[in-house]
Length: 93
Ligand SMILES: [Zn+2]
Image 1 (tube, rainbow, N blue to C red):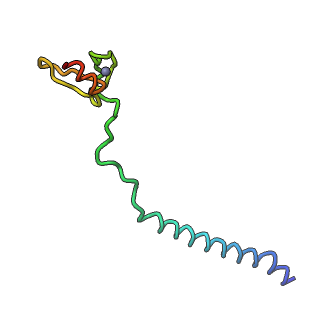
Image 2 (spheres, rainbow, N blue to C red):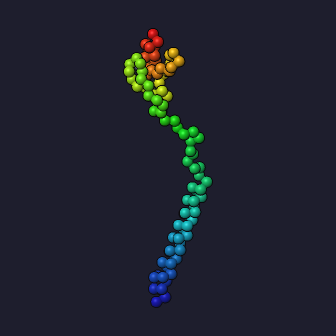
Image 3 (cartoon, rainbow, N blue to C red):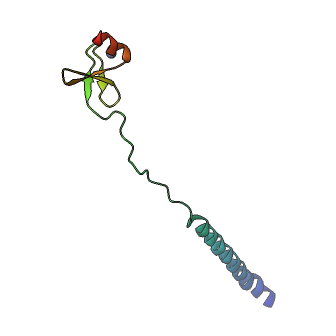
């Protein structure tokens, strides 16, 4: 009778307490591991969109190029954009 009491109630209770304490210490360990961790660093400057900027037509080959990435040359006070140095040289002669 007493043996059955121990096996059916006390032992499961002790196991439950043991598992609970292990789980608690495990979670605390996880918390300690994660709390001081560096937060994902946000970039100081938001990345500029590569395709940003206006699209301008390359007068030599007719390709539309982005003003932010293409080669440019001032012609009569206006910026002319080229897809490549080759086009720029052809345009300027
Ligand atoms: Zn071109």
